Length: 123
Image 1 (cartoon, rainbow, N blue to C red):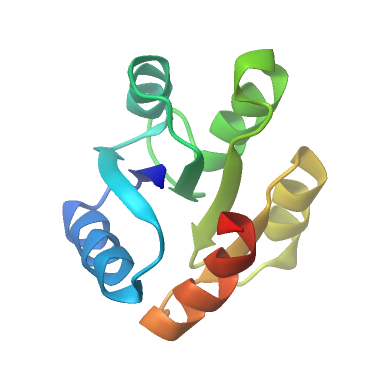
Image 2: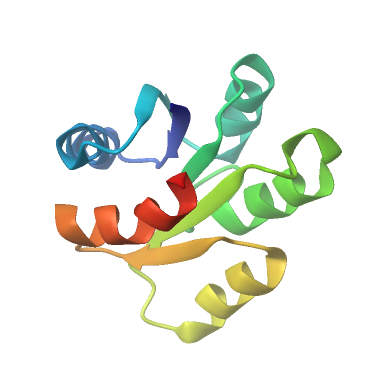
């Protein structure tokens, strides 16, 4: 069972992703939420999550900055980070992959797309 952290500045999106995760029947234990990268870092320190689903565009600290901080922390080397984005430009998605993202999903997404992307990471 894996704990998951959802990072998005939209409460509606966070709740939608939580609902989708529950529907996928993936081995997910607890789901935590953060509204930006700063809140996400605090949540990561408090909860030992194995998977982070993060938006790229957020105030205060965006998803790329968060990803970089996760990858630089030796305690979080095994945490999978999947970026969720509306970005049309490939530049930010490629930057996320370069920084060590485990993958990405574009909004709007379906429950099946989330399940397909996350299943290999849960094995």
